[in-house]
Amino acid sequence: MIDWTSWLDYGFMRSALFAILIITPLFGLMGTMIVNKKMAYFSDALGHSALTGIAVGVVCGMQDTSLAMVLFAIVFALLLNKIGSANTASTDTIISVFSSCSVAVGLAILSKGGNFSKYSSILVGDVLSITNREILYLVVIFGVTIVFWLVCFNWLNAVCIHRALAKSKDIPVKVMDNMFAVLVALIVMLSIKWVGILIINALLILPAASARNLSSNMREYHLFSVIFSVFSGILGLVLSYYTNVATGPMIVIIASVIYFATYWRGRKDR
Image: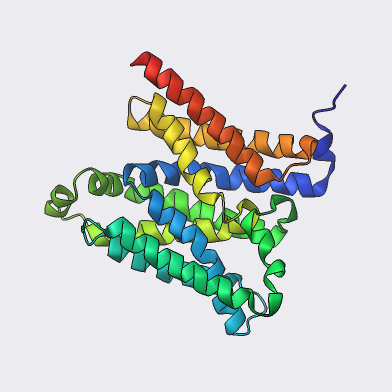
């Protein structure tokens, strides 16, 4: 008989669980606004920019490239936001090209001399290697995000629904856009090492998309998104322990199953 609590005997598993309990609610919350604002391309490009940020740190001779990664992500997010607000038909194409070029530069620098193997782990992530220092960073960004959400959500939602109307009500539209972009950049960069570049966008989008299939109002939308995100994170961690599969992909698989289940249920209700 399988002991479903044996994984808690290990300190690294408890640290991983704590990290998941901190960051998955943020994915659920931020994902709702990302889906509403149709920013999937934005968060995907932002996640891939982590490689370029690491490359910048390597070129600058930094021992710890995390700071360079975060700073580059903030600049990159603000630039993407500026391009996205241009309201041109080719905005998504421009961002895709810019992101591809940025990633290519990062890969070229990191792979010079055949050294890319040192950074390949960031592609899929490893939550089991998270340190107490990194958990502290997650706690800080969790607190910042909750405060930001409580103070600015109504403004953000107004901007999302009708930018011109929000501007006429003296809501600082550009400031809200930039603050949200920077916050997404910080969350992505602080969690990229354990989530992985290839799948972090899925963790931002899937819980919110699943919640949208079921919710009838904004309160339900946020609640379901957070529940789906936390549930996927915890179950993915437990199953990855017993199946010896990487945690990040397992979480995404569960989140995908939830999405298809809610999509079917939503269509049936309609």
